[in-house]
Length: 283
Image 1 (cartoon, rainbow, N blue to C red):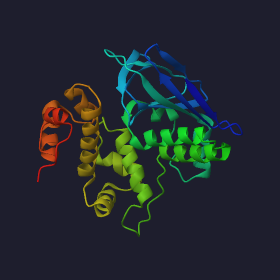
Image 2 (image 1 turned 180 degrees about the vertical axis):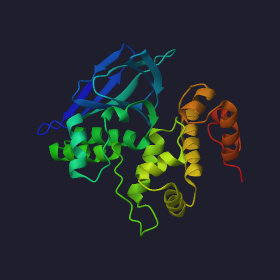
Image 3 (image 1 turned 60 degrees about the vertical axis):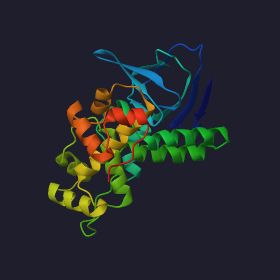
């Protein structure tokens, strides 16, 4: 079953729901050069594949995770073996032209190429929640004006709307902190450095570190580690990936480092946390 919502007046946003039952096979989407895509499951677990120059890359998506797909890319969705249970996903398409023109009307930091936003899997509960909100709005009769507002907001979020920090404030605004958090979550599996974060904030390393610490009460790296632990907790309880892979997806360089840092924050090992379902933090 597919439900489609198109911003008819401006062709900026498409929202579709796809429900794969027990008898469903593979669901294939070929993005044109006019659309940027986001796929997120809202029920069940699905297997997703994207084709690139090296062949098909495959991973598993669980609720709270998204796959962002650049224009001219082919993706395939299917039920995850071995149980092949049904799943439900929301598929959002945002106009590339709209993404490219967003910086003209908003104080958004532009990207050189929207393909920079692409990722096979990322933990992004904000977009996952937004997808369900859009689907509900469509089903309850929201019109093109709502779709246009949603397209503006989604473009702002994807393009990291980071206003230039006022040197006199000494702290980040909630919007600026949200943008930095979104950047961290988008690149969670990568080796994020302090210099990269400072460049994203358009500040020197010294001023960025000082301002971030004043705003959050934590250093950027400690804050980042907290995001990685939160993502790992979600993957451990909601998915079935090997623990070593969970660590890599969340940015831990090796299983030993993952186990040590996780135990420090949660008071138990990743395997123990998965077995228990939840574990209280150590005092």
